Image (cartoon, rainbow, N blue to C red; front, side, top):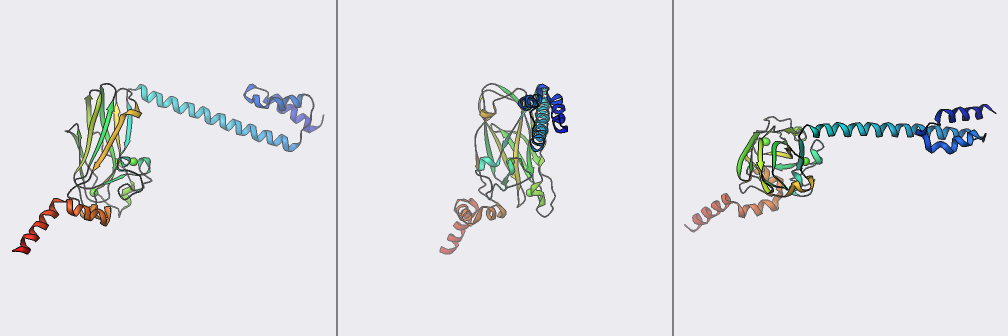
Length: 267
Ligand SMILES: [Ca+2]
Ligand SMILES: [Ca+2]
């Protein structure tokens, strides 16, 4: 047998183990003394190496899954609600793309803006408002959180600026409220910007941590955004000119101003 044939036989002896079952035909050919071209031999070596890499990847993935299940065994089940999705499609003026944000986008909010997140449970639950991911580039903002109309927690954003670069850097508010017990049914979580600078802040993700696993498909029922009736100049600018005029007639402050101007005109 030629050197090439000896190599084939050696290869078959080494690779005969069952982890390379798909190569059995090739090895059987080798055993029978059938010669293969050098190209075919190298091709099979490359295929075996790719197979080894894939098997290694599968083993590592399995290890990761086990690590996750250990976290669940500790009794905590965390779920996140992407807050920009409640406003609508991503990439709009109020939902800018952010590479540093969860889901790749966040929700731009200003003083007086409110966000209603309705959550649904099939059974009684006990959970923690584990935090809200946010970004801020500018003055401090104050955010209140209510559960079914009752004040549950609040946080202040970091007061610093780097010329706009910090909008893509997201921080956690920290735990807002613990040991919240709610019966089955629909419940309301409200996030309100109690105060802000002109530029407001960006809300990214609301994180809830439960003591027992809940159905993630039923957790978020629906939500809505209630924009401030007294928006900051930055909010008006961000929403565009048309929305500006829409707000002009809805806004109480402007209505009062118009009434004063009319009174002055007729006097
Ligand atoms: Ca701010
Ligand atoms: Ca997000």
